[in-house]
Amino acid sequence: MVAIKVRIEAGKLPQYMSEHASGADVCSSNSQPIEIACGSTALVPTGLFLEIPEGYEVQVRPRSGLAFKHGVTILNAPGTIDSDYRGELKILLVNHGPVPYAVQPGERVAQLVVQKVEKAVFEPSSELKSTERGHGGFGSTGKH
Image 1 (cartoon, one colour):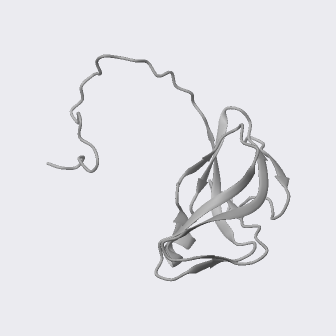
Image 2: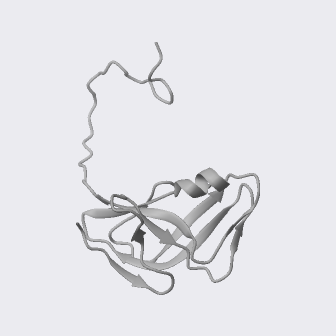
């Protein structure tokens, strides 16, 4: 288990809601409802600042309940918080639902998943090994 320091200016500490949950729920820190019109986005504050250890990232993922019940999800899912970022954690929500949605103060708006990061070395090459799939992409697998 890795330790992540959290400075709380508002809101509350992320919390795992069940024993085997991989994502810790994070709540909004707004003092008034934030309305998100249909097809619009909102940057929702959490009041949290993270110190993520080098070699790790925190992924910001949608909450399935918000998506299923209201069509509200995270626009850039999963969002990535790098270990050298020290600004406030804000959640970029988008409303794909049929009616406006109001984010209530203290509402659970996302989940945070901690992941190890493996760095790669990108090597220029004039040739790549061929595969059966080849250049097929964007829905090409599963075709006969």
